[in-house]
Length: 193
Image 1 (spheres, rainbow, N blue to C red):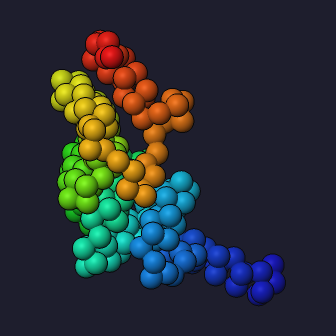
Image 2 (spheres, rainbow, N blue to C red):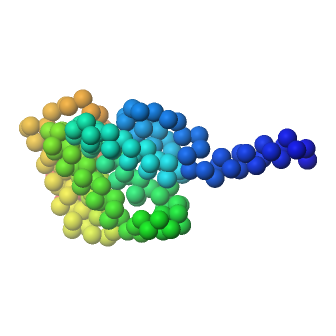
């Protein structure tokens, strides 16, 4: 094998092993969050987390509650993702690994609170789904059901208006409300009107 090929292989291996390799640099917190989701999708939890924490710091310094809600929700999703679970060894070495869903729940709760401060009740509802999903993943159906119901009530609150932030839900359902009704029916055994 030629020296050029060996050098190229070593360079690629080095870059692949570096958590920050091929991570774009930007000062825009929204772009940081968008990139973090792409990194999570390809199993790169550490650089995703770094971008999410950077975005959170920017939004916090600006007093941007909706941005904080988005950053906390991204962290919530990270800490229950397969990318995070795959990086268990690294997080354990750092002393920050959570084998339960408690860390995810805590960040979803922080997301809900930030959205509440920003008066985005649909954001609160979306973050509460993350809290409920975390409880369900830990086998606590009672807390999950109570939180799904709280999420639905928040979503249906007459003060819930569009704030400019679009919140996603499971595309299997036409609306967040339809999804919540189905979750309550499926996991709580209750019919909701």
